[in-house]
Each structure stands twice: as C-alpha cells, then as structure tokens.
Image 1: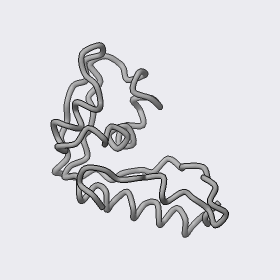
Image 2: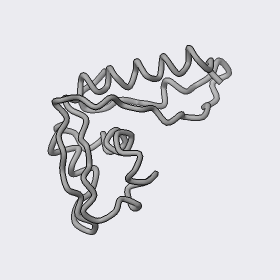
Image 3: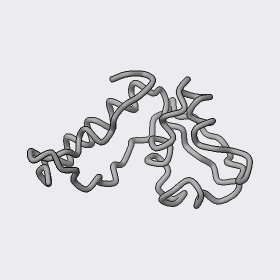
Image 4: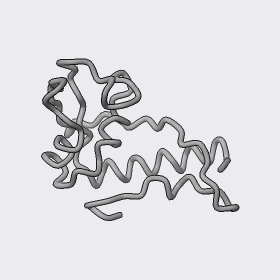
Amino acid sequence: MSRNYLNRYQYFVNNQGNFTIVPGIELPIKGTDKYVQYVKGKDRLDKISQQYYDSPTFGWLIMQANPLAGGIEFQIPDKFILRIPYPLTTTLQDYKSAVDLYNLYYGQQ
C-alpha cells in the first residue's frame, strides 16, 4: 500500500470487472488517534489529510472514521470533533482487514 495513495475501490470489483457496493467499514478507535475540531467554511478534509498523513488523498478515510459527521464532507457540522485515525499505515491495515472480514461474512457481491 502506497503512503501517498490507496485505490480503495480495488477491493470492490467483482469477477466480471464491475464495481460492487462499497460497504460502510468501521475503523477501530486507537489510543494513537488524533482529534481536531472541524471549522465549517475553513477546514477541508484534503488539508487535514495532508497535515496528518502527508498526503491530501485520505479525506475518505477520515470520513470513514466519523460516521456521525454525515456521509459527505459538506455535511460535517461546524465545530464537530473529527477523529483522525492514526497512524496511517496501521489504519490502512485495519481498513483492509475490515474489508476482508466483510467479504468473508457477506461474500464478494
């Protein structure tokens, strides 16, 4: 897994080459996670991702860790405390493990 990019959709392509539904994956809370207060109209997930992960491409991972923030960045309430799953490498491994577990339980669609 590249530190600068992860094609998270690669896990959701069926044998016919079609994309399947991407499930909501729960990321475990770790003692190393970071927290930041989101300021609507000022903060952006790509900037937060850059700050914590040295890459702007992991905003989706921050959203994945914050299901109560809404489904998309523009739904995040002002002054919402975002959990930044940290460190990145461990979090990506957690994500992959959760996808594998999902596929074990429900099969690849």
